[in-house]
Image (cartoon, rainbow, N blue to C red):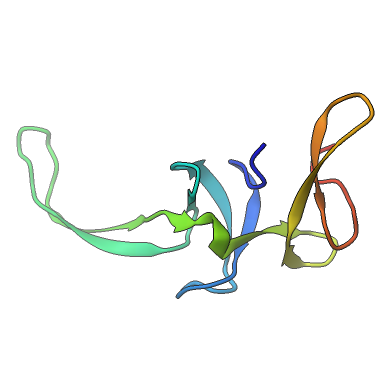
Length: 105
């Protein structure tokens, strides 16, 4: 089970966007995430008249490493570490390590 999933709200811990919050758009692979509004770069795009694309400078999000983000805890208003535990009925759930509160109900 992944500790950070698509749709989670995360806080950036390191890098140029440190402290910024965003929603995980998708997981690129096991180690990288695409977070909304984080790690934006300017990409120079060449025009392609066959596809109807105009050229110019486009801003887009680039993937960020999963170790540089933490799950946002609405109770404490901070990014916190997450653990995984198995309940009595066999389900796996994520919980915040600081207060033991479950992330998934």
